[in-house]
Image 1: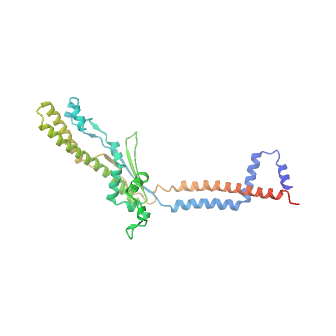
Image 2: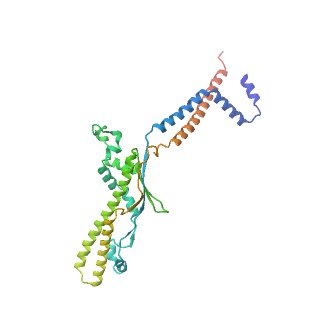
Image 3: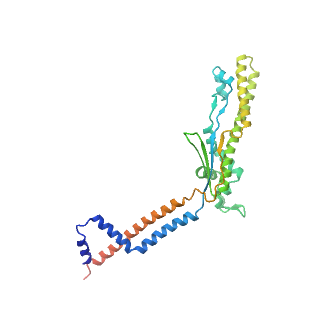
Amino acid sequence: MSDRLDRSHVEGADPERFRLRSFVQSCIRFRKMVIGLFLASTFAALAFAIFSEKIYEGRVLMVPVKQDTTGSRLAAMAGQFSGLVAQLGLGGGVADNTQEAMATLKSRQFLESFIKDYDLLPILFYDLWDPQKKRWTVDEDEVPTMADACKMLDDDIVAVSQDTQTGLVELTIDWRDRERVQEWANAFVSRVNRIMRERDISEAERGIKYLNEQLAQTDVVELRLAISGLIESNIQTIMFAKVRDDYAFRVIDPAVTPDEDRFIKPKRLLVLAIGIVFGVFLCVFAVLLRVSWSADDVHRTDGPQPA
């Protein structure tokens, strides 16, 4: 009877306002449940934000180094002897090796050598390694491989990007140890500079050896002049490589050890906000579910009684 009176009382009122008022009344009615769920969600998010593992970032900002790989004499003769120049891969004036250097930083060969030199397998998979007994805690067929380590570095730890407007290249290392992120980030740049430098020196030395052989086999004055120009260009490349440590990249801002409270993950405010929003939705869902259950109970009570 009271339910029919309530419905007749609100007949003609705004349905939206009635539903909202009814929902608010339900929230008040189940306020203990609402408060409990909201606090549980918020405290769970807060606990996750405080106690979850911190991830730090090591960041190196650098500018690509463009290299003059040909001398003026070679440039003057390149048109006449373009076939010889192209065969040796020495034409083009100024070479921009930025993309090659960036690709080298993420290449499998580079990552494998870095992992081996720094013995990173136990460090990367620390949760599977027993530092006291110096052995893996998993079965032999589950021991992480070099491929697993390279994938982890490439996907989750190392990032290389270039600003298309300024040309600046940024390398970042994300890891749980704030001292290692600084060490690894700077070591990555130093290593790629060394690899690119040694590669160009090796190629130039092979080129000089080949050109000297060609020079000894020809008496044509013009060709001897062209070969001499190519030899001079290779000598300049070797000299440039040996006197510069910043060969592929010049470091503008090296990585430093982050402060203990300057971690990038977890983002505590974001985690807390997500927990609060989730708690609100959880409370709304729980109230609607309780109201639905209560309505079902009323319908069963008001239904036809057995004779």
